[in-house]
Image (cartoon, rainbow, N blue to C red; front, side, top):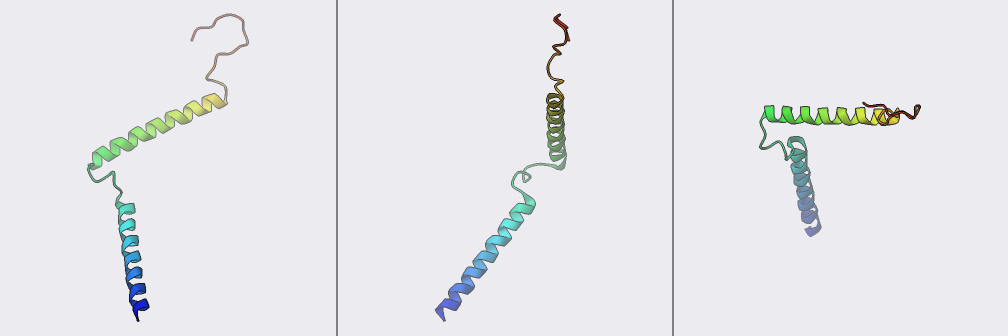
Length: 77
């Protein structure tokens, strides 16, 4: 009979922890002190930064980030 009680308590403890983790996952920790406008501004900044990094990566892939070496004269940008 003792094994059944211990097993029941461990299952309820596991379920409680799973529910708490689910609530924390859904709500998130960082959004507790932010307003909606602050969150929107932060996401716009993140998106702008990511797009700039993508553009830099494309330029590096296409070799547009370096000067051309087709001439021996200095070409100013």
